[in-house]
Every structure is written in C-alpha cells, then in structure tokens.
Length: 128
Image (tube, rainbow, N blue to C red; front, side):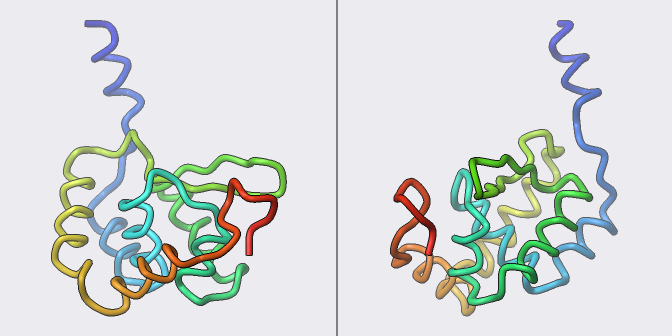
C-alpha cells in the first residue's frame, strides 16, 4: 500500500488549460502524437518526421518538458524524449482520443510515414 501512496505524490500535476494550450501548437501536437506511437524518439527523428529545424523542435520539446508532458534522457550527443509515464490517466485518455481522431489525417499520417522511412535512425552510428 505504501507504493500507491508514493505513486500519488509522484504524479504530474497538470491542469487542463496547460494541456490544451500545449496541444494547440502544431509542432507540439505532432511531436506528442509521434511520441504516443513510439516508446521513445530522438530529437533527430522528430526533426526528420516533422520536416522542421532542430532548434524549433527542441524549443517545443523543452516547453513540453517544462509542463511535465514529456521526459528526456541523454545518450551521448542525442537527446531522447518520451511521454511522461507519471501523467494522470485523464491526460493519456485525451492524447489517445486525439491520436485516434486525427492520426490517419494529414499531416499526422505523413509524419508517421516519414519517420518509418528515415535512414540512419538512432541505434545506427549517426542520426540523419
């Protein structure tokens, strides 16, 4: 039972207006939907899939990290992001509903295809 109490205190406290403000920006929304589909993505994978410059993607990922929506880890030169596993269930439900609703539409469909076709994905000697 102690685990359940500790887990409650570790949960991310995000308010609806912050979540919806984050989802309102196209880059953040597209990044979150890709991260929802994949356990973890490198910044280089997101820049390739979204066709955006690294500083632009990194700035928006930093915003998502500050809100607690994503967490990162460094592996050498690369920074990998994933959906924060400590998000409340209602946030996951919103993200899943958005992904189900728009995942097959442009630009989200094209993002997934671009990522699948990316050469030199992490795990290879270098990102593209």
